[in-house]
Image 1 (cartoon, rainbow, N blue to C red):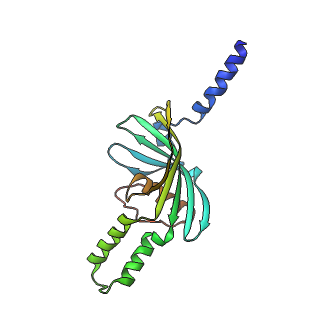
Image 2 (cartoon, helix red, strand yellow):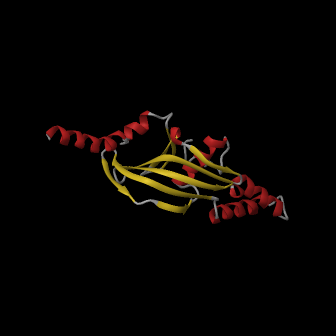
Length: 186
């Protein structure tokens, strides 16, 4: 009976310890965990080995990957699967081409830049779903799981923005939107 209880206990704990992630895992495996954004209290890493294109039906694309978000203010790491839904008609290149084509004064670059940023803020062309959300301490101890988030709009220059942009690049060798060089590391 003691042997059965030990085996059962081991089988229950293996999934939590096998898939736990720690800050040192993220830092010591840069070829796998690519830092795509970093701010004062948090960062965002994409598991480059987990990126998978699920749908290729231009102008629509769907890509899934595992993402890690260390939150230093909360002393934790959020691990989740992100599925991004792209509308290529709303990518940076397409938006700028449309603005230039519709602009009566092609030399008014300031006006076109404002319109471009307005278009990006209105609809960036990427939605996402977060599932399999787990929370760990920075040393990798499992804390709890959270409810999934469905059909969220990506906000310009946010962590999901950089994760989605990097994932698109890894699948199709082109960035979906601007990289904001000073804000991210991919």
